[in-house]
Image 1: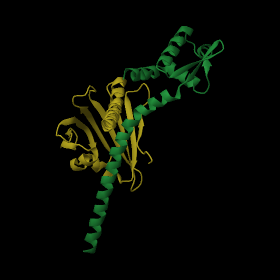
Image 2: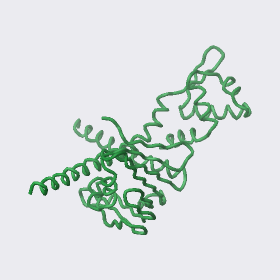
Image 3: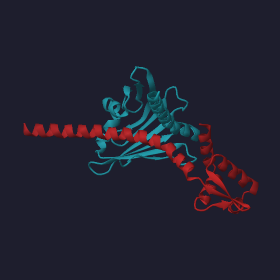
Image 4: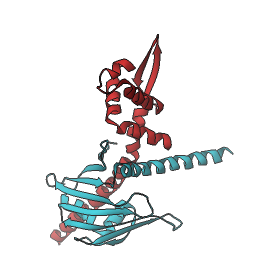
Length: 117
Length: 155
């Protein structure tokens, strides 16, 4: 569970979210990523380290350069986190709808029988 | 099956927005929130108390098949406007979540359709994440149980 909390802490920071958005479309080097921010290069490096540690970013060596790219599986895990909660409410609301539609039928049925009496 | 319930959990916020459209007149959707026997059917819980009025209070309790209480929650209504709005507090007992504030808005979408919008506000963003993890943890436990069953069969 600790690792999971780290993922949420990782995406709670606006700079780190901006980094994830940047590398979503293409793999980039640390230098290219840092060029997009006014913050100091070591600060960006620290963010990259955190994102890599919790596996949201993956590193790939290409010659002398290290490229960072997004790990879509890990991103999906974050979406999956909300999914059980949503499923719980969806199940409840499906039941609510079924229960009330049944009572609606009963009301309509009673009205019809009253009319025919 | 099409998933009709939406949950919005924006980063850095301490609330959740749950929305759902129903094939029901708004009056019936509201009744499903104000009458104890109906609430117990769709929430799958025993309704100990449901005083459906301003400053009234409510309490739910769920037991497992062995009769052990596994869930208890309670709260108070702050606004209770039939077919329009419910504002209430929600407190799960023996859970480290603190009290939540819930705004339920009921809207008619024509004669036989309606929409419910629930805004749930937590004490902090961390409390919200904790809440989201609860059914997740529950799901993991279920998976473990099933794994155990399969493992037992293999013995």
